[in-house]
Length: 77
Image (tube, rainbow, N blue to C red; front, side, top):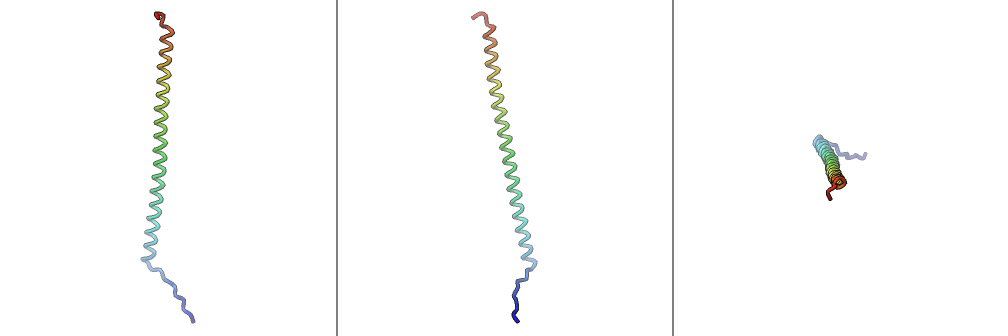
């Protein structure tokens, strides 16, 4: 008769595997949250930059329009 030698898992091995799985899942969760917050932050920064660009363009347009109107009604020149 040949005896098979099988390794019996004890509770310490199972505990270590569970701790490692929890640590890996936490690391993946932290990486995902960092990715999402980074994307959200970049989107907000882009929107704020776009708002500033639009404000500058509108301000320039209004200033040009004021000059045109004031020159059109300036009869002293």
